[in-house]
Each structure stands twice: as C-alpha cells, then as structure tokens.
Image (cartoon, rainbow, N blue to C red; front, side, top):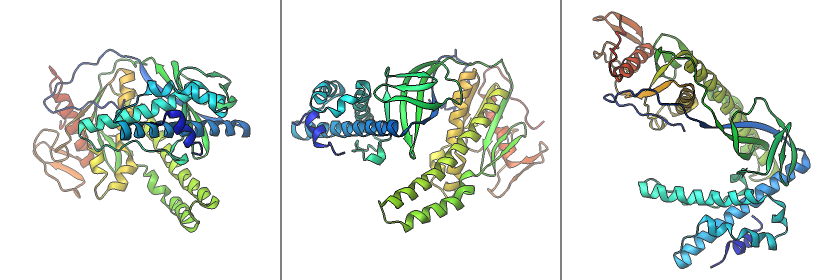
Length: 403
C-alpha cells in the first residue's frame, strides 16, 4: 500500500438552527442565553510577494488533500482497510524531511488539510447511514480548493494581519472583532483574498419585549408583517440579468480555458458576487430591524427547496427566504427573542378568525363578510401565522385578529 508521502510526491504537480413548530406543539419559554460561534470576514490587500505565498500555501494544501484521498482509496481497494486522520498526520514529519518546499508552510495549516478529508469521509458515511444521496469525496482541482485554515496559532492581529511563514498583510477592519478568536480561515474569492475569523461571542440580550408578529414572505412583497407593514421585494438577480447576460456572452465567444476565457469567467463571477452581497446586506438590515422591534416572531415552516423546483424557481431563489429565516433565527437567539415556525398549510386559505376562506392564486384581496375583515391576501396570511403561533402558547388566549 502506498503511504501518504508516496501519494503526495506522485501528485506533486497538482446554526441555521431552525425550530420546527407543529400546530399542536406548545411554545416553550425562552431558554438561557449561551455563547454562539460567529464569523467576521475582512478584505485582505496582500502585495505581490504575499499573494504568491498565499497561492503557494493553497496549492500545497490542495496537493496534500488529494494525496490523502488517494491513499485512503488505495488502502480500501487493496486491503479493505480504513485510514484515519491520526495515521496520516504522523506522516507529515517524514514528508517535510523529503520535501524542502513543504517545510516553508505552517504545520497546523497542513494538519487542517488532512482534517478536511477526514471530515469529508465522516460526512459521506453519515449520509450513507441516513439513506441520503451520498457523493463520494472527490479530488480537488485548482479551481475547487479556495481556502486554508490556521486552527489555533500562527496568526496575530495588530493593525495588520501577521501570518506565520507569510508575513504582515494589510487588512481592512471595517468593524471590530467581538469575542474570543478560535480559528482563522484565509479564503480566495474571485481573485481577492479574505480573512474569516471564527469567534465565540457572548449573547447580546435586548430589553424585554412582549410584542408578537407574524411574517408572511412572498414574491410581490418580500415580507408582510401582521401589523400591516410591508417590505418590497428588491429582485436583485432580476436587475442584474442584463449585465450577467452580456458577461456570459463574452464567455461563450472565448476559446475555452484560454486566458481571455478565464478573465471573462471572473467577470461573470463578479456579477454573481455583487448580487449575493446586495442580498446579504438587505436581509441583514431587515432581520435586525424585526428582531429589535418584536419579542416573539412567527414564520411559516416553508419547504423552500421544494418551492425552488417549480415554475417560479428563479424568483424564489432570487428572494432567498431560507437565508432570511436563518439570519432571523440566530439574531433572535442572541437577543433573547423567540423565533418559531408554524405549519404553513392553509395559511392563505383561512381567515384569521379561524374560518375557511378559499382563494385562487390570482386573488390578491382577502374579503370575509362574516367577520368584516377586508385586507390584502399577504396581510391576512401574516395575521393567520400570528394566530397559529399564539395558539401554541399555553395559558395565553388567542387574540381576535379580525377585530
């Protein structure tokens, strides 16, 4: 069986934690706040020499990852034997003794590359046990390996980012880092480098607030609150489609894998990255406002993945409801708020008074003569989400939303 060193030389050229609410389940009181893991991302501005060292570190980590994967595959195919992280990590000193270029890289960075392949296999076997679609770990090309990690030591932040074996890199600290830094991940995105600090952060509880709100997400309005306020859907991907179409045509005209083709591909990635950043900023600001304003937040437990396969797939993915719920969830947890999801079935087909009020998808108005409620379809759904959420609370009377 070929060892990791042999395989390495042979390839030398190469918590949204979502709480599911059921209609008959009681809403539990808020739990004691606990520390959370947060990531703070900053833009790096390396010079030419530092950029070359970052790229060389990335290439060696990728080479080591592929060699570790190859050794595991060969061990299983020839001897039906599994190899684990500890066995492969013991081979690193021998590799450094043979390969002088590998000595120039921090030892924990190399160890983390081996931990990644170990995590990939653990995730693969876990998917197999659960009966899910289990993709076997694959070799990584240069375009599919974009980060490396300092797990515990080897970096220091004091005006500039000091990295062991690389140097002091200029960093834009646009906001202060909170909590205790645990790990540092150096990431390459579309030719630019970013530092991602993973920190343990203390919770930041807000003053007590008993106000409850039901949220209904949609495509015409991004979110409608039960108090009647609406936030329009920015449709960021739709607005960027004209620029994206031009960039993709430029890629189609180039010879594949040529320098001009790679440059055109980076332009396409730049458009997608801008849309992603805009959507992130919009959702962060909106989720912060909602968490600051309400003490109890109810949303629908939507199957966003299923909705993104239908006729409105592009619009659903452009809205990004799942990412918005994730941001609401962790912000509410840190602030000591309650965030729960309710059964989404029939929320648009019932009146907030609890009686059935069937509507077609084209019906955008909610009219019920018995209780006298006349409002928009989205507002009525938000009121129904609020009613369902409040009905989950013990010793709390369900509010008359049709008043």
